[in-house]
Amino acid sequence: MIDDAVASLSGVSRTYGGIAVLDSVTLDVSPGVTAVVGPNGSGKSTLLRLLAGAAEPTTGAVSVADSPGPKPIGYLPQRVPFRDGFTASETLAFYARLVDADPEAALERVGLSDAADRPVEALSGGMRRLLGIAQATIGDPPLIILDEPTSGLDPGMRERAFRTATRVATDGTAVVLSSHDLDLVDDHADSLVLLAGGQVAAAGSRGELLADYDVASVDELYRAVVGGSVATDESPAVHVTGVSNR
Amino acid sequence: MRGSLAGLTTIFRRELATVFRTPGYGVLGVGLLALLAGIVVVGGGGATGFVPAIVDLLLPTEVVVPLVAFVLGYRALLTDTESGEFAVIRTYPVGIGGYVLGVVLARVVGLLVVVGAPYVLVGAGVWLTAAPDTGIFATHSGVDSPWLYVRFLAFVVPFAATYLALATAVSAIAASRRAAIALGVLTVVLGVLGGDLAAVGSLTGGTSPEAISGLLARTPNGAFRGLVFEHVVGVAFAPEGGFIATGRALASLTAWTVVPTALSAAALAYGRRLDAFLEGIRASRRG
Image (cartoon, rainbow over all chains, first blue to last red; front, side, top):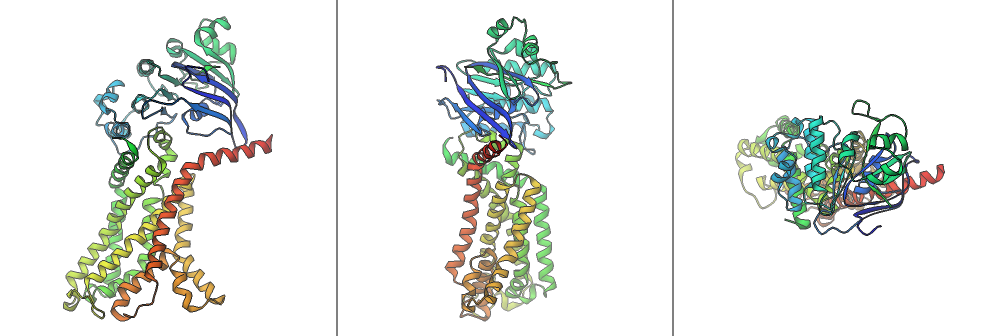
């Protein structure tokens, strides 16, 4: 693990049904917004699940640096999991009580104050996702993992989600996120990891990778490293996430 | 508000709110009330007294209470693991023990209301319609009394708790709702019939009839039935007792509650590691 790394994966592999989804991945996650790019089935969600502790690696080790606060990791899974029957405010209050945080401030941070009294099941998909981001950031964890936080959001909401992620990725916080929107990744990510076939095809700071591959954007970088067409929300063939290489 | 107790109470509050906001559980309670009242009415009504009513309710209780407990518990832990919310909760300072206890305790409170209220209402109905001598608060044998009904209720609650704990364990082990239902049905059938069939089997296998009360005390249904005979029904017509060893029966009900709860916590704590271990074996076989 490098000195300022917030988390690291060392020789991590994971199989499902005996089939490798991630294969010998070694990465360090540093403060800042980081992203991983790869086609469907390249192992992005598995990587994030392993990092969040939601799954155990078949081989290798995942380590997360000690946290000064009560919550070392903030995690938003690909499918927002909140219970129906509770309002947005009640949902966040439940998590806030666990870490002595202010739920109202967290709702305000993602612009959901006006929807505080709405039941979770009555929120739009995008609003649920913003609520998920609020949950992941509550308690100021040093590592925040957001699995496709912009999925299902309109362009304005996507921008807001990325801005929120960028805002919290300060003061030593590492945000690892995935998104279909390479333009926003280009605008906000500090580091990139490109996954292909469960392996790291390229990783490093965004600037270095663009220079190494002599390309002008993340979109072009993806084409150069992974190949094929870049997915959009209409054809979700590509995901983007952020981690940095070792 | 931090620490394991704070985590437990926070989980407890959310789970309790979930139970009380689930309309189906209210319907379940009303259905149970109708069933119990119907059984008492068919058995002669409240005028016959508390002990006859308890005798009428005993067998249905052994079947219906486990079913209600399973309905309340078979998704208790599965809901969060299936939706992915358990993975999110695990990123907070909540221990698995506190999480499981919070869920189980809240469900027990729900069970007290859904199961307890119908029995209390039926008991109140018997009291209101009972013949004059059943209103006597008897402390000796041979006389019907509301206290005997209270004792009966006192045994129904831990009996129901054993099946709730078993249902919770099923919800921790099952990978899907369908699997939980299948496992739950199997557990209820085994629990309701298995103990008695095993006792009969051991008798035909040469076990002494004197040992039968000890054998029955090992199962939740046998322990519950034995306690009801020993301390409720038997008081009225067989004061010498001898149906079951009370301590052993109570210990059995306690064990059937504590062990499945501990198993639930162990399943959540080590399930992912076990899964990764098994995956490693599968992968090495393919490789």
